[in-house]
Length: 340
Image (tube, rainbow, N blue to C red):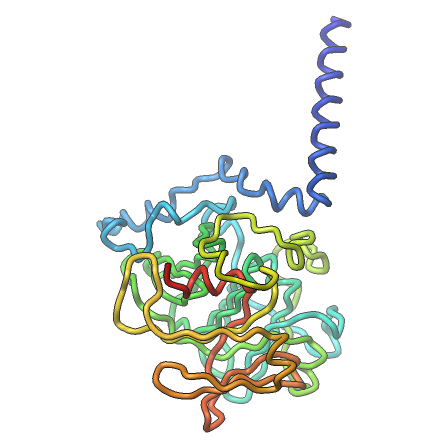
């Protein structure tokens, strides 16, 4: 028995030392969890998304915009990352977040709301009503993409799948999967449908409140226990690490996590695995230096300008109408909008 106990103890110590060395190599415990998070897929049902579509007598191959082999398991199952469907709110005087917290700012019909990254990193989707409009606010921590859109009478959830390393959402009324950076249905009954996007701004809470002092701020009272004041992705936001395979990375000439903004308008073509339409990207560091850049876009000139108050890029028509855009890490644009 003593010999067996020694063998078990030595094995446990060896495994512990091995795990410790892997964690050290990863740089931190959060980096380790992120790098190996995909292994949790073996603990969860990763087939629900396709099963729910097949239950509607739909052939996923025929109702897909992408190659299904590129629809990857992110680790958590469908709704394993829970959306916030009954959001509660604080004010500027009651929010626990500091003024330098990064937020998603949305203003509709005179009502302003800020969604802190500290919460969005853990939930990715908020189904809300702002200014009388039912909307969904979505954020992908792996891509830094922000897409707000009208949701109608349904809600959206996190599918657990990834496409080109980015969030795949699903419509709870019919289980259609949507590529978040495209805001296009990629699998299911509403394949190739475009979401009706709204403007969303990435800025700091301080900057947002300076312009919208009466803004509501998403509360940490979400019904879930999460550390909303801890960034759960280690050094991912600033290092060069990509966890999942992403195409066309030879087309970027800056740091893969450099911040850009992009605009896009889809046409009626539906090529397999690719976007069809017009798109343009703007590197934040360049626009901040230039103050303004004018480009040809879908048969007209548009302007990207540096908003010194919000400290971000705003894209607009020449008459001043804001064009819905999204921030993103630099690696995202060629993966979604470049043609091979």
